[in-house]
Amino acid sequence: MTTRPRRTSLLVAALVAALAGPLGAAAAPAAAADPVPTTLTLSGSRAYAGTATTLRATLLDDAGAPVADAPVVVERRTADDWREVATLTTGAGGEAVLEEVLDRTPRTNAFRASYAGDAVRAAAASGPTEVTLRRRHSVLRVLGPDSVVDERSATLQVQWRTRQGEGVPGRVVLMRRDAGGTWRTARRLTTGENGNVSLEIAPRVDTRWKARGAGQVWVRADRSGVLAVDNLPPGEPVRLPAGAPRPRIDLPSQPRAVGDGANPVVTRIPDGVWGQMTGRSWHAGCPVGRASLRLLRVNYWDFTGYRRRGEMVLNADVAGRVAGALGAMYAKKLPIRAMYRVDRFGWSARVRGADDHASMAADNTSAFNCRDVVNRPGVRSPHSYGRSVDINPWENPYRSATGLVPNTWWQSRTHPRVAWRSSRHPVVSTLAAHGLGWTYGTSDNHHFDARPAGMARPLPTPDCGPVACE
Image (cartoon, rainbow, N blue to C red; front, side, top):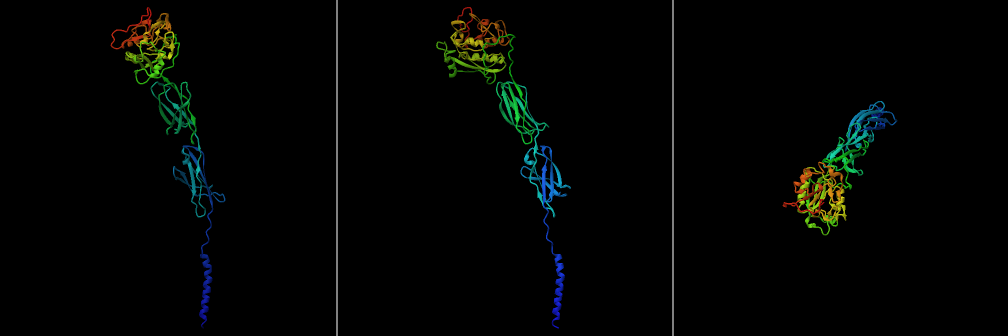
């Protein structure tokens, strides 16, 4: 009787165990399968800046089969980060297409794509893809006036465009060539977003201008054509009669004018100038010395209509008066061909002073010259005292003891601005108003004598007989 309950318990336990085995096995979870690997690629077509590139994302599984209906995120690089531009869904071929407008900066034309994966397929991402820019052709121009009046300014504009009319911002080298010179770099400029940059120029000679723009990643280099800018005189050039002979000696143009108006400056004789005078326009035995002489520098209008700066040496007691007279000529735009000190022409044994024959042959306006009268050896010229001024001698000949010098053509002719045969001529009357007398009239057309301030009578002149004492 005591064993029956035990046998029953064992039977129940066995039954429970038999039932629990299959049920427990069914309830235990199965081991999860690994996600299928995927590959994501991204490509972009070459395009011009400002136009769209076609971005193509392709998602494949590990067997190379396309993955359709998958979301793909496309990002674009910014200056310092990445930003999402679109979420695409792949088609039956595993591809998704997007168009994006390219910038001119390569860094911001980089794209990347990513796929987050799902329960069956693994995530994937493409590396950054930088889309290559196609380079546009460009057109570079230098624009401006074809002429500019001397001592005035003009505006040049460098214009850089694509052939489609877009402005090209970038660095440009502006080149310049002066008349008779070679090309050189004038300025390094940077065009703005509109492709333009302007600058002011004030050339003192005829110039030529051109520019070159360096190539960029989005645009090709270019060189402009040449812009010619002529320098025009601010005054009216002298128009001489047909057949008028030119001076036998050509002088280089003097430096351009300094300051406004005539701007006369009278100084003592500098050491360098005195060194050039000694042995030429001044020598031992002259009636005046360095202390009694002054250097006058003054602006004048030349025969080509330009303002020049000339100089002459004068007696101190008339330097101010002559400065005023030449200033009045300047104000009336009465031209002078040249105004060099006669020392430029060297010593002449013929006149025992600086070579006045050469000075006249060059049509040079001058004053002090300690010498003999031209073609009258041994007779001291009034120029030796520094109070006589010769103006435009080529057009206004001197009747010397041996004939007309420096030419005979002009003696019978006049010119309203540069050649006079009457006291009514504007040059003669202007100088007379400032105390410079036309001492010998038509016997020595180019010669004027200045009277010191406060002196009522003209200074005595040498006795040269029937001819003028030039």
